[in-house]
Image 1 (tube, rainbow, N blue to C red):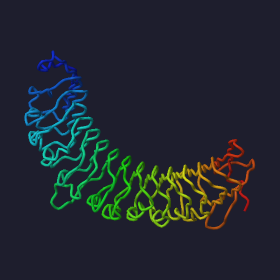
Image 2 (tube, helix red, strand yellow):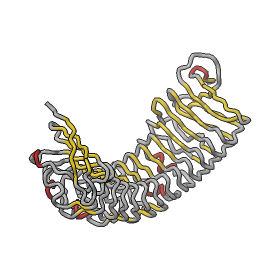
Image 3 (cartoon, one colour):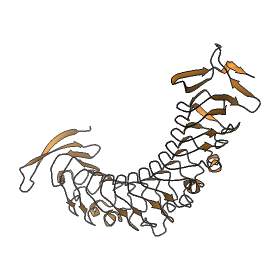
Length: 403
């Protein structure tokens, strides 16, 4: 029978009065979670004979240093959370007592100003490492455990990545998720990302990137599924590095300085489902979505688009059950657009300069233009626009085609 209970531990904080730390313990799952303000030591639990597997310490502690003795009572720990404990320094041997088992390490919301490489490079079973919201400035060479699959260093002060991060001498990185959002990166040169051949998810948003090397995704292109490069200073040269991302499903390029759409690169992304490229300086969109089969969302709003190709899609294009394309807040004077049949499609073009529109479906055998009548609706298109500063919504039923 699982026994979960709370207990209070009194901790002497040197010149401070006794501080009480509340802990929750589960005897079956072998977990302990402690939360306190101003505590300055990690509680120990010798009475459990080193059987604890999940340790969690949170809540505005003032623990500045951890060393070899900090976890001597928890040699079987698989998951260790040290979040918001005021940590500034880790000794190189701090995890030596739990090396064989530690798989998940959370050091978020601390005061670390360096990547603790020497404390990590012996953790050969470590899979997940989070160091978000610290003060780290760079990730040096040979600092990342070779078997790591998830690394989150978001919201630090990182301005540089090494071109050889892994401790694995053969550089066979297993990293699948890399989150470097909210740092000070300006350029990604050479093979700083190309070293991660297993990468599936990359979030490099909210940096100051104006350049990404053209071969950055050469080795991971067949694996990458999600790429977020939003809120940077990227221009049209970003398409050069995206040529290799043939299997990407979700691509976010919003809030940049991109002036063109590379139709060839986009059309080769046959698994693409979501593209966000709003808040850029695009002026036109060509036939970019001719072979995708599961398009769900295309966001082009808040650009300077004056023309959209009527062959934006082809008869080979396909949509999810619901599909949205947003072209609002642009400079379109006319819209002549063919869209493959779908169950529920939304086209948003409000806040443009539209005078003429022609929205129609394209299929292998015929072209059908939309008009409005009262027949039964099987398939819906919602077409939103503004006319003389008033909003209108027009619903086009399936049976209202003029052939």
